[in-house]
Length: 85
Image 1 (spheres, helix red, strand yellow):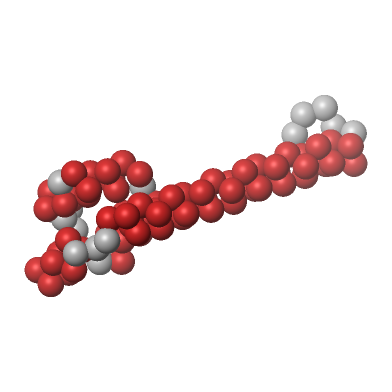
Image 2 (spheres, rainbow, N blue to C red):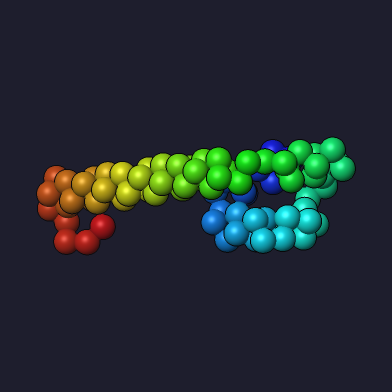
């Protein structure tokens, strides 16, 4: 169930698939009937809001890491006076 939810919250294509074909989306996961029933009852609007929040947070982290790597690379070049790193 945790794997299913993680994918649901972080993968927009999978979220779309779940919203359009919830029963089909269960096929690659070993979910009990009770888990499937619970997932079918999830508030769809809240799910979309949560998913957007996780995706935005992930994108923000990736932008920060890229910016940080760029800063490190730039300063290593200055420090060691290297042409390419």
